Image: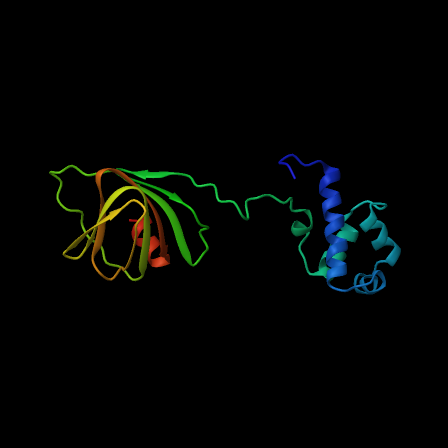
Length: 191
């Protein structure tokens, strides 16, 4: 459905949800009538659009079907599926969150700008967890303790984050797809 909903569309959606919930839960009109203290004909008229949706009918129906009134009228959008990333920049680092804030793992797109040849090596961090990244574009130098590992476009790297680590872009900007756990999110996003 589009972003603009008419009252009739929203009511039709609520009526269809009531009927669907009733049949999914295996209630006949009579059984739901007993649970709600409404008549079976009232429930039928609500479901078919021959009776106005009103609070005195909707509240007992929602309670008996164990749903909130909000759920009955919630207009479907793609927001429960589609994530629309918004860029966050901090100096030479730009990130786009690609996962929901409440998941166990975090996915993000990251863009690293190269540092100047005169700059000191980046400071390395240690934190609980595990990191994984794929270089989408450019080249990245991964610092793992004393090791310096070049990771090219199309290559991935995976490592335990209890090893001191950092990364820099080589020769030009680099774009990465990163996946890490919540500990990694706190270390990479919030510092």
